[in-house]
Length: 140
Image (cartoon, rainbow, N blue to C red):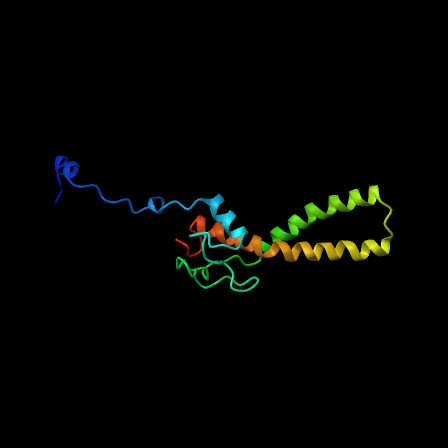
């Protein structure tokens, strides 16, 4: 049967079931915490159990981190950043200094390796925090 419009307007409104009604997860704060290896949800627990393996869940708040799907994206970001850091640096150093080619063959790959190792964990944490803050891949 059809309900009258007067009866429909007096009934209590249905709660909003859309994902937009969920609590806000600020992106900048989440990425800032993840870059430091902290849980983006609470800021207290550690995000990584080993160098590149996230903990299964935060010891402080219980947020699960084993649902992420970062895959190869952190590596792509690190490669992009390395190119933007090292290529201009190489050009300027070669313009300003006369470093022998043998030394350069040791310096630039070594520097690339050190920077890549230093950047991969924070970048992976930032990618996972981005997924968490946007409720992607099981973080809903």
